[in-house]
Image (tube, rainbow, N blue to C red; front, side, top):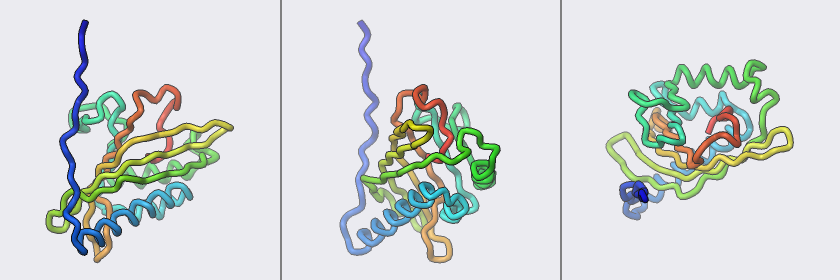
Length: 179
């Protein structure tokens, strides 16, 4: 009989509660809520404005959530140029799985600012996305690990890793929305 040991993630702690950290927490939450709203409204051009021009968006496979895009297969590994191409495609008739567009609703919770290092801010958040299409609903649940920085005084995402908690995508068929 073999036993599996569950991988225990490293401990995560938020920032100490100070007036500055609470304001930063609020600002990060508002950025994530805005991103969710823009994606749910299919305002993909607006969504792109939340990212820096050197941004990277990664979605690892469900069987290797810690996978490194440099050496492992991942579902998505987009730099900003590929993010732009993805949004152009999703807004066209060429994205057959999303034409007409699915309806989605995103819920963001457990937002935690974990690191402030100069101009860069790291945070995590839990996410649940419900996708409605052709009389069916599909939940996508997971976590965001993000890095942000200020550009012209405005907080922008420069790295986002969207980790799906699903064991497989077989019930969903694919990941055709931006998670």
